[in-house]
Image (tube, rainbow, N blue to C red; front, side):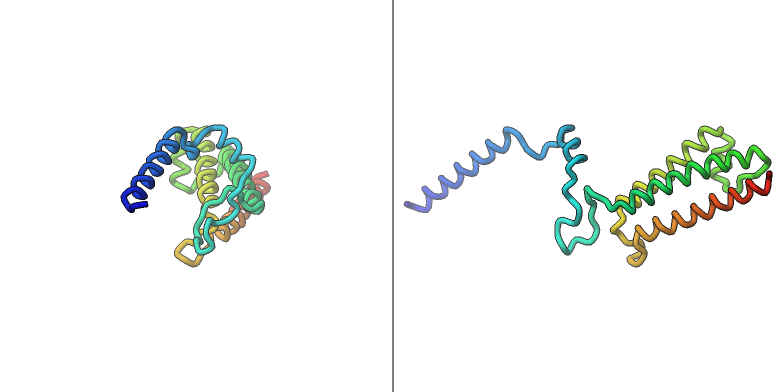
Length: 162
């Protein structure tokens, strides 16, 4: 067999493979694939051992608890803020004060939406480090601690008003 014949065979095999691949690409995203991926999460860690910053399909339960707790505290904070403002308190944060002047619904929706977006971003990047030394999951725990302190302080102010 000559070299020319083997090259022609390789070229025809490559063309056949391209034709078969062009029929249907298994990597096309579909809604069915999305649903199956939601139920059967497979990626629990990085693809390679040396890849430090990665996204996964499966997150730790503590992240779910911390994220939901932060969202719950955000809702409680918004409700307590509205109640305290109705009893004579003043909003010190200029951004939230501007949103309050736009209306209570705008204030509450924006406050909860901002918290939700931040929680989703932090949970998605929980393996990352900020400034190469502060882990994002530690930031989530710190935010939970601070938010708990804020809501506790609001309850204290509420008891002082009564």
